[in-house]
Length: 164
Image (tube, rainbow, N blue to C red):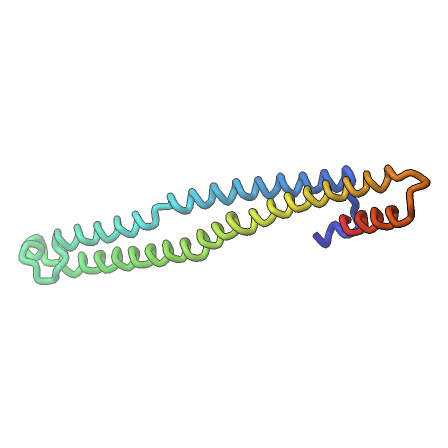
């Protein structure tokens, strides 16, 4: 709020608050889209798919001394082993990427959406309540008559000062 220290409750200030609220809502919508997209990114499925494909390659003839692959030409065992190893490494990297996306991106994003943006909304509610209290105190003070006793004027001035 340090940007608003010299502003009073004016139409310009209200417009700026509305603009910031609109930007916060837009940011929340964009965060929700990113959250849904990151959950659907299927990195876990890619991990399972690579492991499944590596298992299929291994079942087909990935061992070095497999008689069937030796009868086909003898080269499939070592070559298939390299492919199997590569797919298993890819799967482990995808699993690492998935866990990092979940930890770094999704957890932080959820904290931002559920805590920080809610704090901003709560600040707006507190501001609206404070403005209402201030307006009531100001109306009481302005409606004073000229011959009102000094102690009542002082009390209303104090209420007005504390509500600001």
